[in-house]
Amino acid sequence: MVKVKIVKKEKTINSLRISGHADAGEYGKDLVCAGISSVAVGLANAIDLLAKKSCTIVIDENLVSIEVLNSDATIQTILHTGIIQLQTIEEQFPKKIKIHITEV
Image (cartoon, rainbow, N blue to C red; front, side):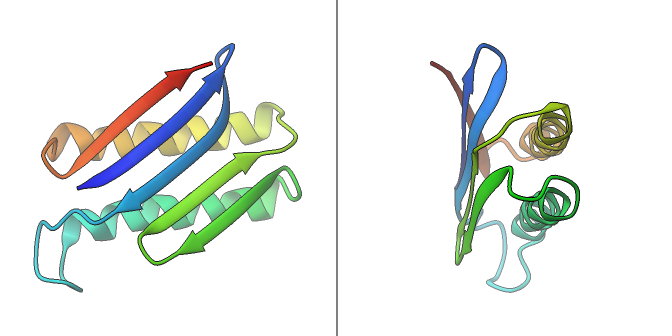
């Protein structure tokens, strides 16, 4: 299962962590994982292009971690858009991806 952990403070996203594997198909042919990976890499690319130096981004096998360093409207819009995309996948495949949001 893919686990998405989002940490918010006062409705501002501070971090997003995507880890695991959906196990919805043969390795390399798992369409659920492919969709999640596309969203995750798209988020990282959008942040890199539109909000440089606003986040620390780590991409590794089965892990994408985004820590917000300097928040603004652009970074929040990018992150909220990605979360909506991940929630859409979760609605279709609730046994393959779980999103947990923590308010601190």
